[in-house]
Length: 415
Ligand SMILES: Nc1ncnc2c1ncn2[C@@H]1O[C@H](COP(=O)(O)OP(=O)(O)O)[C@@H](O)[C@H]1O
Ligand SMILES: [Mg+2]
Image 1: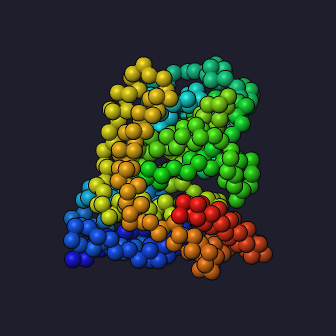
Image 2: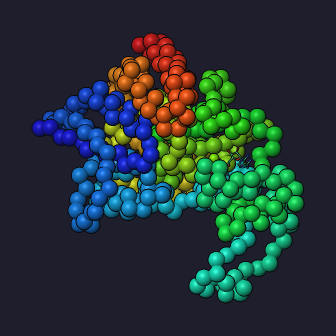
Image 3: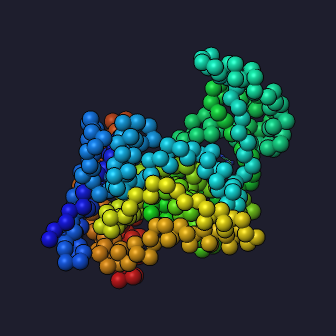
């Protein structure tokens, strides 16, 4: 008998990765054995429409990219997850685990996160009981003493940050007052700057797969992800892969990125609540095909195996390790054992090696086609002025071709 796994892509403005994802799944044309049956895969884009709360979902898996700002879809994916659809990422954990929670939890696990303090906001709305509550219970505090306790330079940034909104570097008390005055009603963190860092890494995690990319925050948007290969040693790779995998397993996120700064040989994570990470070819360029391929591999595995949605996080096993006297490196190794179990990593590797043997080659072939170039062009046209479209299409597609070259060399060596 034939079983079809229905995969839904729940999207907002994303254009390039879904188009490539759909083309690659189609090109793979899988018919996988399962017991005496055959499994194939159907992909479609989810439409937003009224839904009956008693209606069962037709999807086995939904790859969702809009929950963090679109309540209708958020509530829909929560409902279908309750019914058993595997939703990437867990919508509850996107809704509830702000950047602040991720700092607090990873500090509890011993991660070297810079000293961080949460500030009550500068201003409050004049509504309901707000003003009464503030007059009664908000304790007057010294902003300067708080800044001193954190230490300069520091960063002031929203507790629920994203996209560099409201982030400022603060070098002295005068700048601290200025930034606080400008922060208005936002709840802000003060975070000690990682001083003298010599490497900025973004680790992108998709299921158990993690790619570490050198990042340059001072470059223009399209050049921040750097194309570089030997920027850190094996132990740096291991550490950053573990950071990303552990954070993602802990928060039930299948697709998230972790930013860390290295100073004196230690990687300090500073931003790892990015559960809708930038996935556009115009940002990722060389690293874009890896991202699409990894999304294909992980989502097909989860759909094929009917992976159960992880609705509630299970934090105690991590806390039990945190409460031992082991050095952090050893704790991290043990957290990663839990994380790999959570992601069913061994079974995934086996699935990839048996059923997706040809995925690497199919991806290289696809990214070399005119169809892939046309997708890049369409994405570029959405972001760049008309007279720059051709130039930047060549630029980004050229970097994708460079990936095809390095990747086919790698496959050749393995093959
Ligand atoms: N503690 C820190 N030390 C050094 N640089 C920082 C620190 N926090 C933030 N930054 C800089 O500010 C940028 C934005 O901060 P981040 O926490 O990543 O906010 P967002 O969630 O908006 O991306 C970072 O990419 C980094 O360049
Ligand atoms: Mg960031």
